[in-house]
Image (cartoon, rainbow, N blue to C red; front, side):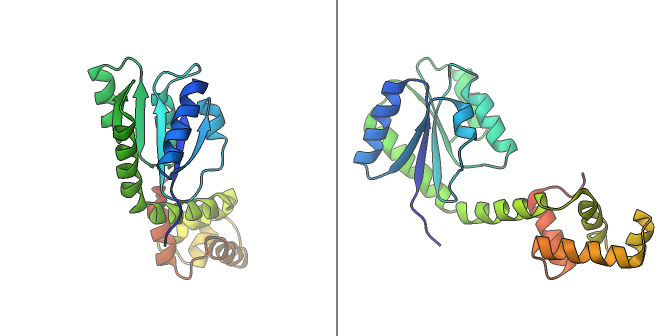
Length: 205
């Protein structure tokens, strides 16, 4: 599996967005720039190797908030923080939270290009697995509240009759719900269903 990598840039300084876009283009890297964290979060992230160049001090919010929100949404691609006045505590905070690197402006163009290439290489190894997780999450999100209840009971090993008892419904209805769950989740067995839930880290709601 392979795909063309992409570098996202989130910086409220238009001049820096343009400069970084040109630098990345000169290094044969595809990029897309955003002026705000909100605009970036509203975009449709590509399922391919990814790196994010993120300014710490945005006009609205800050890079750390965006980093936290991305992690909450399950986007674990490498982040290279950029700042005009970084401090050691700030860089430690970024790295501890999983940032790939923390750069203080101005930085050498070659240094940035090398770091981006390293980050994309690192993400290349994880993006396929991330794509699978994203697909499973979409399937899970398509379930109705009742179907999620049925799924939770199924992965504990309960049979149709037991599920019907737990939900206060008929066994026939429980079977219908089970069939819908298996179809929507594209699972052939309950074991596959359990593995999908483990992948999403939502074994208990």
